[in-house]
Length: 101
Image 1 (cartoon, rainbow, N blue to C red):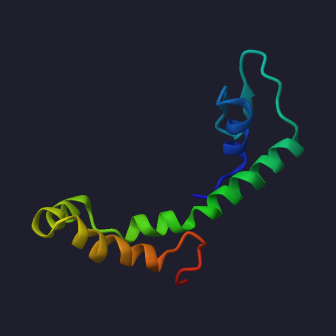
Image 2 (image 1 turned 90 degrees about the vertical axis):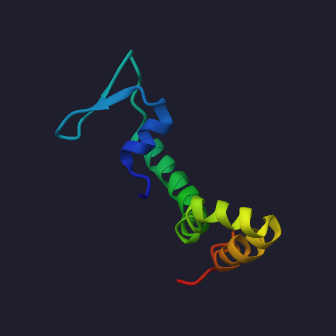
Image 3 (image 1 turned 180 degrees about the horizontal axis):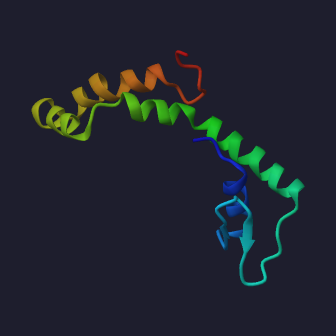
C-alpha cells in the first residue's frame, strides 16, 4: 500500500503518537507536531521509495513458494534452481521497473 499521511508522520516523529477514531493525531511526551510542509515532503520521499521497489513486489508475487523452491534445489541443485526459477523472474521484473505492465 502506498505511503500516506500517517506513515509520513510516523517516519518524522518515530511512531510516538496515536490517532483517534476521527483521524485526529495525538502526539505524546511533549512531541512537537511536524509542519504540514514537512509531512508533504516526507510523503513524497516515501512514495518515491515505494515506487522504486515495485520490481521487488512483483518478483515476490512471481516466485514459486519456498517449498517448491526447496524441492527444486534438492532434486536438481542450485544451478538449475537459479537458472529455471530465479533468473526468469529477475529477467521479467528488472530493478529499473521496466518489466511488463
